[in-house]
Image (spheres, rainbow, N blue to C red):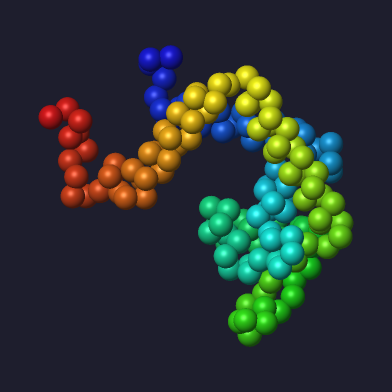
Length: 154
């Protein structure tokens, strides 16, 4: 375990999770990306298309392909945003709401099984580490041009 980099552990674990979600999504005739999008859309008020990409950490071009496919499958509809004349709100259709529930059930099952096999303390430590990594990145404390890359060796 000592020789594995943090980056590798994150990537390998996320790839396993993504593969598992995609395999499960096939049983519902969908993909993990569609499921993730369904969960990112507000089921009551809809979500502005412009805020969906940043919310999901996804590029606009990738998201627009997913949204087009979701619209063709009858999962979503686009409506003018009453607060922004040029904007569009993405709303779930009744079929989209049904598939959103399936996606939510899959995610909750994953959470439940992990919680059954990991102590509360371990889980709290995991979230604390993830939060620290995100903060270090957000605050540019890893690759800032003002910080020496090897300052941990000093």
